[in-house]
Length: 245
Image 1 (cartoon, helix red, strand yellow):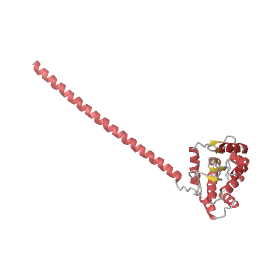
Image 2 (tube, one colour):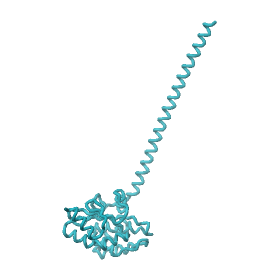
Image 3 (tube, helix red, strand yellow):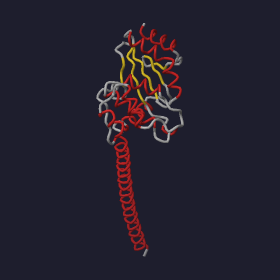
Image 4 (tube, helix red, strand yellow):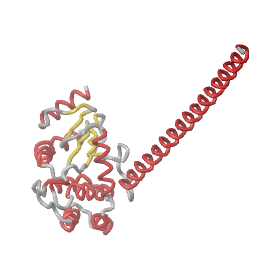
């Protein structure tokens, strides 16, 4: 009798072992398929996220037209051929930029004439919120059209000479076109570019690029890559002399 009991216990034990092995196998399969499901979900979410980001970037750059005369990866317009590079980031509605131009324009002209500097102007738009007509973007775009017409320096000067107050609607397109004519831009190409907003997407791109470079205020002036703290005419001259030494 005891022998039969032993055999029954052995059979029961063997059955439990098989059942446990089957249960473990089921758990492994569940874990595997769950893991595969999570991976597939992450891949799908990643693809969706990439698609959204790509779509947003595509929207931002849709219709982007870069002026053929632009330098520095298409973000600036160069004046002069000197060995020291001066980068100037400005918003045409920025009153401090207007003050800088008033105080330093003559000095910049002299440095350019003496072939000491190459000045790269980056027209950016960070004050659209201070205008009901996105004047910062429109004026930056108009300056690009002027550059394409070979009159950036003249138009740049005219924009600051007629700078609207921060917080106002800014100059309308008709006035921007009129200023172009005063700067020698009398052909239809400039007027059409202003009316059609040909370079507005470009202005946005330049602004984004400036932000990615750490530019968060205007004017930002770099002399040979170093931020100019003293933006007076004397400070600019001293920085250029030091960079060229």
